[in-house]
Structures are given as structure tokens and as C-alpha cells.
Amino acid sequence: MPEMFNVRIDSSIGSSKVIPIFDQLVMLTESERAQHQTINNNNNVSSETLPLELELQNSTIIGIPEDEEFSGEKNPQDAWLPITESRKGNTLTAALHLLSSGIGTQALLLPLAFLSLGWFWGILLLSLVFSWQLYTIWLLVNLHEPSPQTGVRYSRFLHLSIVAFGGTCALYIISGGTTMELFYQAMCEDNLKCQAKSLTGAQWFLLFMCLAIFIAFFVRNLNSVAPISLIGSITVVAYCSLLWVLSVSKGSRPNHDPVDAPILPHNTNNDGVDGFRNVLNSIGMIALAFRGHNLVLEIQGTLPTNRKQPSRKSMWRGVAISYLLIAMCLFPLAIVGHWAYGNKIPMNGGILTAFTKFHQNSTSKYIIGAIYLIIIINYLCAFQIYAMPVFDNLARLYTSRKNKPCPSWFRAATKVWLGGLTYFVAVTFPFLPSLGAFTGSIVLPLTLVYPCLMWVAIKKPARFSRMWCLNVGLAFSGIVLSLMCASAALWSLIINGLDANFFKPR
View 1 (cartoon, one colour):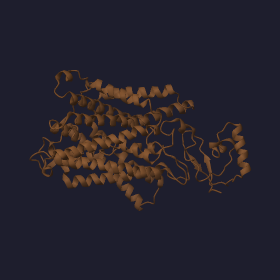
View 2 (cartoon, rainbow, N blue to C red):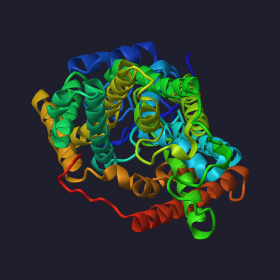
View 3 (cartoon, helix red, strand yellow):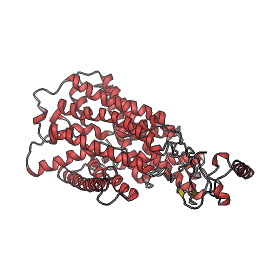
């Protein structure tokens, strides 16, 4: 007979918990199981709910085979929500989601960070932050299902998903719309008649938003985004590889030694307060290049689990695959970008702008256009992943009140609503990317601090034990780093000013 243990169902429909209890275990014989099955059939209860749902009907405590998929799988509300509606994911789909959402526009600025730090400290800090955030992902993966025996699954990092992800979707609209305009200009080249027909900034934003929401209508849940994540993963690896490979093939800028480059473009003041501020900004750029931690639990929520094969095993394999590819993208971007362009790399657009600026005349417009097009496709794919927690949160509000699945019209309405909201934010605040360093520093604890503190709070390691000291130390360091980076970013905004072009995207 399979190993058995004792459980009861938490009565809260939104808890997703199966809680162990330690009263006397009732072992069911085959005849008793058949009797319970008959009761379930008479009450129109699916056989798949046996034995968990029995306790809800007659308070009988029964045993569960260790290979039964019980951990949060039987909560009715989870089957109605976009993130947990389908738990048929696997290592590959998890890796694709992570890779597609793990690299953004911040990665293009990595060469800029090396200007203040130089080769040694730049590579060292990039490696340290990569290891740090990979460790916090490991914490999140293990905290998703703290103990497979309890059946508790935490499938959402934040329930304030509209706040957490709505801003990210707006940034994708701004970046995507801007890249669409660059693609159009690259194809037009010097044709003035063609350039005169270009859309306005707000119209490019609207076009990108409409495409993103149109794609969203074809995905029902996070697991169904897997084919889109496959495209997103291919495109993110493609454009990162194209940028650094083409930069190597074109060679570095003449008469340029990146090791001795000035701290920042147009700024040769290498001493004192400005130097310290620039170093902090560079550290912040490196820290903000890593993203997607606030999606780890959601992605793991799409994976099946049981006592023999908890979801953390397949999830961690997905993390290993995706972050190996992410490292193969980010490190060459940073190193080659610094070697090829050094102090010539612009603040806006990073290595992408530098490549098109310095090699536009020696590179086919179709190659440059292809890079822009690949980036646009990647942004459209990543938008779907970051939008899903918002749809999930809105669906949770509906199902909690109505106690039934969301109808099709509600799902469609939420997608149109999100598109309209994020478009309004993008047009109202088109300068959001300029605030990226400051706002990113504020939310940096999501990546480097909260997972460590959550591990201590949930796992409760012995005080001053190795794991306790490691996590408390990293959490404290992350808080200090976040405060310092936010201060440096705000300092730079005060000194350099902010072009707050409200309602005037360009």
C-alpha cells in the first residue's frame, strides 16, 4: 500500500492550502473507498477529487497516496484563475517563461556601467549580482512549496499585481512604440517623403498596445503563453547575440582604450563626489539588469506537483537552463559593448543606439531593421507574461465575489481595460524610462531582499546559524544597496534635470 498521511482541507476558498493534522488516521479499505466513491457519484463529485473532497462532505479524514497531485491542485478557485488554471507545465515551459521575461532594456545599458567600474570591478560586480539574484531565485523556488507534505503552495508573489506589473507593461508600450518608430526610420533611410508619413509618438504607442492586446486575446492562461515565450526566448537571444557579434566584427572605435575611458560621456570629472555618484549609478545599472523575480512563483504555479516530484525540482531545472542562457547574453553584451564603444556609448539606448549610430553607414539597413523587428517581437512576447498577473488578480476579485469562473466577456473586458490603462500611463508619462534607475532602485528589494527575509520568516532557521546569517546579511546588504542606488539616481536627476514631457511622447 502506498505511504499515507493525514490532511484536512482549509475552508477558505482562496487559501490553496491542504493542512496536515495529527489526529488518528483512518485507513480506508477497498470496500470503504468504493462506498465513498458511490457517495461522490450520487453527489456529482468527480472521481478525481477522491479522496480529498470527502472531508468536505462528511469530515472523514483519510489517507492520500504519495504520488497524488494534491498540493493546491484541488482548490476550485485556482482552476478559475489564469495563472493556475493549467498546471500542465514542465521544465521547458518554465525555462522559456523565465528567459523571455528575464532580459529587458536595462541589459542594453550594461556597457555603460563599466565606464565607472572598469574591466575588473565591472566583471566582478556583474558576477556577484548574478550569483546573488540566482540565490534569491533558489529561495523563491523552495518557498513556493515550503513542504510538499503540507500541500501549501504560494503561486503569487504579490496580490497587488496591478501596481506591480501595470508599470512594467506601460514601459513595454513606451519602449516598443519607440523601437517601432526606429524600425520605420531605418527602413526609410534618407527618403524624406517616407519619413514625413511617420506616425506620431502617441500613435506608435497605440499601435504597439493594440498588437499586444490582440495577442493577449489568444492566450487563456499562463501555461498557454508557452509558445509565445518560445518566440520571446528565441528573439531575446537573437538580438543580444546580433548586437555583440556585429560589434566585434566591426571592431572597436579608433583611438579608443576602454580601460582608460572617462567615467561618463561628456563628463571627464573623475574625482570626488561625482565619481562616487557615478560608481553608485553603475552598480545600480548592473543590479537592475536582472529581472523577473516577481514572476518566479507565478511560473512555478503552472507546474504539477506531488510528494515524490515536488514542483521545485522541475522549476529549478528550468531556472538553471534559462539563466545559463541569460548569462550567455548579458556578459558578452557588457564586455563587448565596453570594448567596442567605451565612453562613446550613449545614455539612451546603450549598445543598441551605439551600434546604429556608429555603424549605420557600413551596415545594411535590412540588418539594422531586422534587429529592431526582433526587439519589437520580444517586447510583444514579454508583455504577455507581465500582463498575466494583472489578469489573474482581476479574475480573483471576480471569482471571490461571484464564486464561479470568469465568463469570456469579463476576460475580454479586463484585457481591453489593461491595454487602455497602460496606454494612458505611457502617453501621460513618456519619460518613465528616464526614471528607470530611481524607480528600479526602489523596487530592488523585490529581487535581493524580500526572498531572504521570507526564507527566514517561513523556514525559521536557528538564530545565528549559517542560513540565518547568510540571509539576514544579504537582506541588510540589499537594503543598503537599494537606498544608495536610489539616492544616487535621485541625485543625478536633480543635477541633470528631467525632461517631463507630459502627454508629448516623441
